[in-house]
View 1 (tube, rainbow, N blue to C red):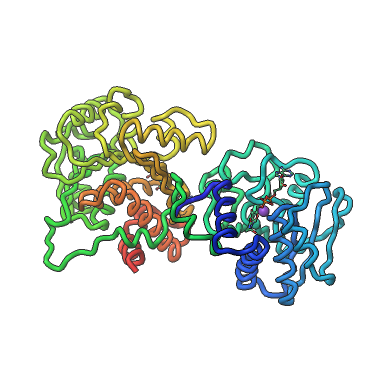
View 2 (tube, rainbow, N blue to C red):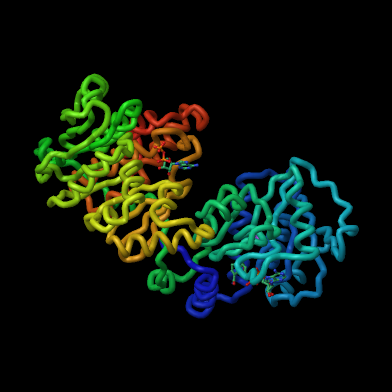
Amino acid sequence: MKILTAAQTREADAFTIAHEPISSLDLMERASSALVQWLEQKYDPAVPFFIFCGTGNNGGDGLAVARLLHNNGYDVQVFLPETGQNLSPDFSQNLERLPQAISVTRIQDMEDLALEIPASGVVLDGFFGSGLSRPLTGLYAQLIEFLNQQQATRIAIDLPSGLFADAPTPPGSAIFQADITLTFERPKLAFLLPASGAYVGDWHVLPIGLHEGYLSQVESPYQVLLPQAIKSLLRPRSKFSHKGTYGHALLAGGSYGKMGAITMSAQAALRAGVGLLTVLVPEIGYGILQTSVPEAMVVTDEQEQHLTRFPEDLTKYQCVGIGPGLGQAEDSRMALEQLFRHKLPPLVLDADALNLLAADRFLRQQLPPNSILTPHPKEFERLTGPAIDDFHRLQLLQSFCAEHSCYVILKGAHSCIGTPSGEFFFNTTGNSGMATGGSGDVLTGILTGLRAQGYSPLEACQLGVYLHGLAGDLAAEVEGETSLIASDLYKYLGAAFQKAAK
Ligand SMILES: NC(=O)C1=CN([C@@H]2O[C@H](COP(=O)(O)OP(=O)(O)OC[C@H]3O[C@@H](n4cnc5c(N)ncnc54)[C@H](O)[C@@H]3O)[C@@H](O)[C@H]2O)[C@@H](O)CC1
Ligand SMILES: Nc1ncnc2c1ncn2[C@@H]1O[C@H](COP(=O)(O)OP(=O)(O)O)[C@@H](O)[C@H]1O
Ligand SMILES: [K+]
């Protein structure tokens, strides 16, 4: 699903108004009805609502929600800062329509707000949405600071006020700290990035029937991965298939004290459905692998504690995954350099393989095209240098993928796949229980297993991050986020495949 910029959202609104056709006021009514439907499912009429409105269309939404909730028996109070701003026509119309029985407090300064908001209440933020053009100051900033200190549940309409939808918000700006954000039609880019996403809380997308004629042709490099698209990528296994049908993968890594990493990658590659798996480890890993992953074949390096060479001929493998637990010994770096000189099957590179690449510009330039790299933000910084902010990091991602013709999964709460052609795909599964050692090693195994089965690099990346996160979500339902550990991720991978295929 494509993500729209604030400007594209305005175009989508205007296109819908012109081509459905529908009046702007009725479109606002549709958006507000969607909000109210969501709110009424979650809160009963005993819950008081405190609705704060600016004077643009975001405020118009707030006023329409106030009327609809009131008409359905909810206790609603409205608060309107008076800063002499222009009123949007739809805001004015909704102010006229507001039933007399609703209490309206006009605020010129903070003294006008003698207000106790109970912890059981809900604060709705309708100050500003996608029309924000500069950071908030003055009365708006003071009100936001006040609301951010309240115990009540804070819900933002469309976008937390003060946050830019698709550009960095200057540090120190006043931003509504939402527990929940109810947005229209598409998530905003700011929801998916760590610094801005921290203000958004749980976000939900409410469809409001924006015109398909616009949505289907609009161009955007940004997409989110959703269940339907993932389902269409999954290939069913066929009745007369055999292990040769599903590829032979090689996973290389492990070193003294870090054999667990490659062991978990191996488990994950098998659970991802690969036909055959060989694991290349230093001598000390032999007994460990043979005991803990009996399904895998094991070949060992003559060095006892870390890898120093790769087999000459790797063409029998359909994918090679390198890095988990590898370490950064000089002879491991040389082995990688040697490896890149040969004809190679598709590669997945993670962890210390990335650190070795980062430390060696020459090695980076030899990177085989269409490789998949899976850095976390620190590993990514080592590869590209520091980013000024999350948006700049996306630019670095785009140029790195183009320069090296590779696919990079920048890992995080919404892992982002960068492609050589400049697209970005954000993942929507996963939870903070996955912030635990070894989660990334499991992802490497899944990607290697998928790529060996013949999925394209982009398909493997999309399926890999989505299923990895979904396994985390299913595991968290049973184990809880706090107690989730990386090995749970491959244990629940089968359930994730089944859920994704439904
Ligand atoms: N038909 C539509 O256009 C629809 C719009 N919707 C709502 O409309 C919102 C966008 O409405 P608007 O475009 O009116 O934008 P906003 O409601 O975000 O406000 C824009 C107004 O605020 C001013 N402004 C911007 N930054 C400011 C700042 N820092 N301090 C003070 N004033 C500032 C602008 O000059 C403009 O007058 C969406 O977020 C959504 O909530 C929904 O009703 C869906 C339908
Ligand atoms: N808060 C979070 N929400 C969702 N996924 C997360 C979160 N934290 C970490 N993850 C996922 O867990 C994995 C962690 O990978 P990584 O940092 O390489 O861990 P390790 O090196 O310990 O294996 C990534 O796939 C990342 O997307
Ligand atoms: K808002």
